[in-house]
Image (cartoon, rainbow, N blue to C red; front, top):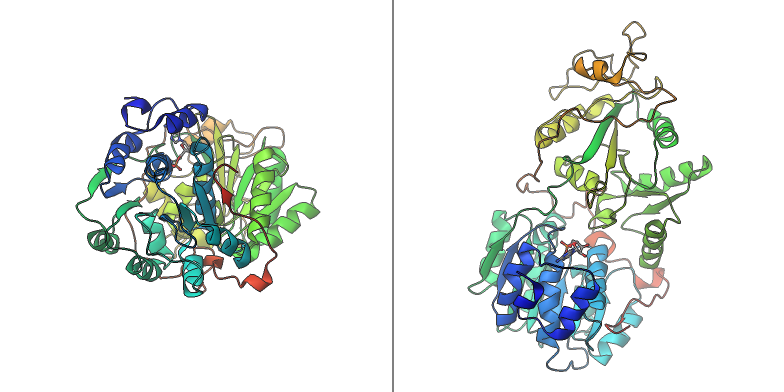
Length: 482
Ligand code: AMP
């Protein structure tokens, strides 16, 4: 199967070939012909499967006939986060470079007035996060009654983030006669219900996760420090010892991100920060710097890093153990991409025991324990609150009498399942003795609405509702031709 078998136009095929794609991915091969036929499509596919091109490529051809009217976009793509929306917009630039479609990106953190100007000129493709679209709709700046093609992307993530009521409202404003393409990595009952209301006789396409995420190729290590305060020290030691080309450093809470970044900078590390409350222009600039190597370390949140697609990432460090086990997979899956090696370390305190257990159940293996210069070696509390084997009292380092096998060869230490010591001369990477079983993301678990995973306080639309007057003007809209 090649792209030319799918019914796409010459212009799109040329752009695809310029992008260096040789063969369609399974979701592309299966979805594109149906989208071109005008059928509704229900795609059960994760990020990384090539799903974005599976809807953008045929959309470009469908939309190239016809013209946009002022404030009345002809198609609408709903994305859960600004970053995903921006990536879809980039896709239109890449694949639409030989066509004249216009697009607008309607995301939080960008000035309303810039967005309004572009909407006024008329756009073929409107790519939006639900919160900002609702704002603009309620201000009368966008009319949805000419939308003939709707894409709902990452629906399960929308559910996680509490966007479903907004989406139901938005879909209520669209014409009943339209084509709908609906993508979700998982199909919890709430999402199934939506597909039954939004889609008419859809072609259902289900594809396996692209790169079986993570654990197979990622060398992993767990560093258990006695207290939360000890994490920064352990992190700095790690960063000094490891051959870090670039690294994402994940925090669970937005408020910790800036503090950690500043602390790293104070210690001479080249670090940036990325989280949902930052101004969009700063986020874009930071990402560009990170991608181009101007920043080596990026302290970030799950949401901000979602969909971040950098092939050559040497390390992922979980400064905090993720609270939802499947986030571990998403996080560490940012490294070891495209066949390259990658390393992921997780810093934990004894109280993180139950979260570590959940991750280990998910990935079907124990994450090898790694010791860092006597800073680590504390024991995790077990799920039931008791300490695990060989544990030190909560909050205290491992007792001196319990020998840390510093001088032992690593293989032996590992054979005994003891923490693997790190000595100053050696790199810190611990290679797993056997390939790790593939982990797949667990079935959907209902989370509280407005849970953005970065902190536990209710959040409205993840920064999509940042008032415009707090933000400087940034141009984030333009025609596909640039
Ligand atoms: P997505 O699942 O849409 O996030 O795409 C994941 C990555 O795959 C992106 O970096 C795309 O540029 C890339 N990609 C999409 N389609 C293809 C293809 N047919 N061949 C190679 N790479 C692709």
